[in-house]
Length: 120
Image (tube, rainbow, N blue to C red; front, side, top):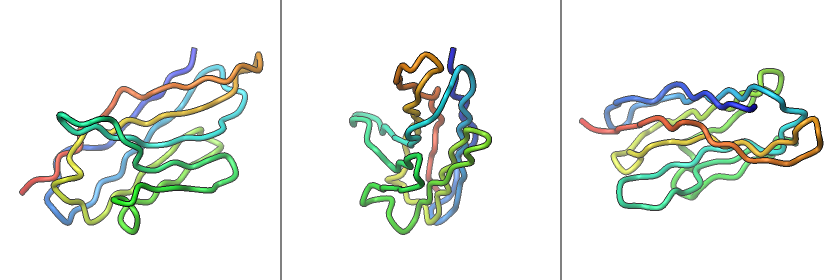
């Protein structure tokens, strides 16, 4: 069994900062990629940022310059530092992992989601 446990999130004023964390545990041989997605009410889930095993990252245009994704390989944990938050960043944020099990199978898992609300 593989689990993703998210933490962080909450209510913040425009211009503020938040840090999200997501720790993966269980039968994981290696992790190919970890990422953050978000889904606002009435909208589809969208990629926010992603980091692959080699450390390369990619960001949604809306996140560039404001958000930073990082990863602690020893802890199988991914972080999303969000600065200069805007009301349009309000959404449920989900972490994701693409990993390989000890049996060699590639799989994807999602975190439970955490609400981020940017409002004055």
